[in-house]
Length: 601
Image (cartoon, rainbow, N blue to C red; front, side, top):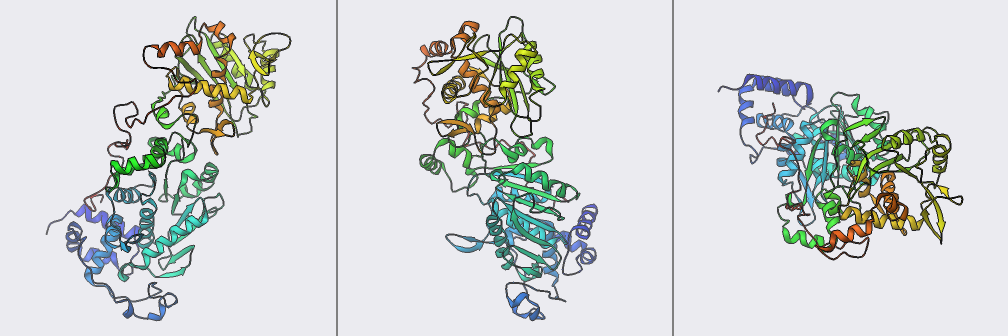
């Protein structure tokens, strides 16, 4: 038989470098290379391989704590030729190993063979063939079971590997380890590694590979040499960025160490979302797993899920749509329509989407933080010459001092035709406004005064610099910005601005950033929308937002009460394509299923 010698050499090198067998597998492969290559080329998924009789394993006293499902330090096992061929084939391909030998617990049928869906085979292939993997999935789609199968393969066929199984809570991570242990217990004996430790939280094999569980906290794996980190439900982890920054140096220090992240979405925020959206430049390979990849789920199932919850919840929990926390100010359908663009230029952290134009009128809304690396100081420059309003420039920095911040505001506002500037003064914004007014002598700084328990933009001796964000101001602003966005009367342009509205959720009688998210840009937009209702704004721009919205609707449909837009369920989301039917958005070549076993070699 002729065979590809270069492919065999690659396989032999892989076996020697990566795998650890309870027999002389490299020597066997070299001595039987024609037989091995023939075996690898055949479809043997249904071929039964003779197993050891568990009760006749030599030195049965060496079984771990006399548990017949756990193999101990058994020596001198005699393998048949078929067993050695099968062992090598499993070691080369995790998908083959999982399809043929992994058993799982079904709620309906008990212990069963793991009959994978095609997307689960994609996941296994993704994990095996990539160093950094990220999987966004819908609920109840078997992501954890699939990851557990891969982890068992990784630790079984590779020596001296430490695998950390991490989740938001230690109990969740422990449950994953228990799934791995259950699959291990029902492997055929000739594929099992012996165990030297075996408890609820960890297991160590005789090949010196170890699997252990822990919570996703910055101290969980610090100081350990980790070969594989599996991070389950990463989008739902508190302090996720802090955790990642503490553990990533541990991972990246090894040239072959791996990271696997899986999660359902949790809004357009956090580390998981950042890695997911930036996967083309950060080294990660991603896979999107949606509800319709399970063949038993049909349109009737989808309608039932939407009726039981909501369209927005269905998009997030089953279609892997990241924008829109539950009950966010803008629903997921609206957020999906918003389009961001890349800035034309970035100058000193100011992103410029449209440069200044002669005779155009601009307004700058300023939010101020303390510059301690937590909340952001941010401002947005709006072109208010005509509707739709446009975001033309943005700035965001969480380390700039309130003393230095006014210089950035001043230079940007001056550039944009001496734009009107409105500063939010609830915290230390009053200091920034004061520096702009007294030191930079900026004349277009807006002032407000109280009039019958409400604030209005005004000038006079009884006025104060900037605006204080009260419940009334925020209520009007939230209602108005919602209407402007839903009626396409404002172009947001900036991706971070759009993302913040996905996590801008109700709290008490108002809205603010969801846990772990930011709302600095969102609040700039809210204050801008409040300002557009002011008589001063109408006089300066000759635009009455309310009147313009009414005009726009006269020849189309009756305008619903200001700030609340009723929407019928539209699965096409206004785009002509059902986003719940074709939600994948995966570029060709993102994931190689490697259907023909071992072609990767």
